[in-house]
Length: 99
Image 1 (cartoon, one colour):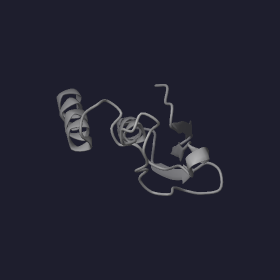
Image 2 (cartoon, rainbow, N blue to C red):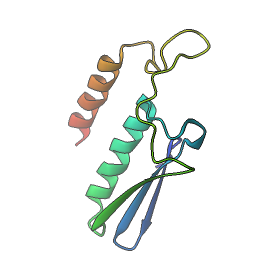
Image 3 (cartoon, rainbow, N blue to C red):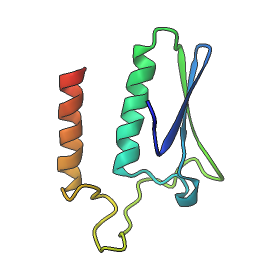
C-alpha cells in the first residue's frame, strides 16, 4: 500500500514504520494518523512480523500533533472540511467494517 506521510518496510520478522514529514519535524496530521493505523493493521495481519519499530525521519522523532493553519485559513487538522472528531470517527467506522 502506498503511503504519503510514512514509510513502511518489512525486514524479516521486523516491520519498521518511519514518520516521514521531516520538514515539519514529523508533526502528526490526520492523514498520518490514518496511514499509521493502516500500517499497524498491516503489520498485525502479517503472520511473519514479530516486532514493530516506530521511528522518525530527519532530526526529530515527532513534534507532536500539528495544529497550524493552512493558507486558506482552515485548520491543518481539517483536511476534508469536517471537524477532526468527525474525520477520525468516520475513519474508525470504516476500519470496523473492513476489519
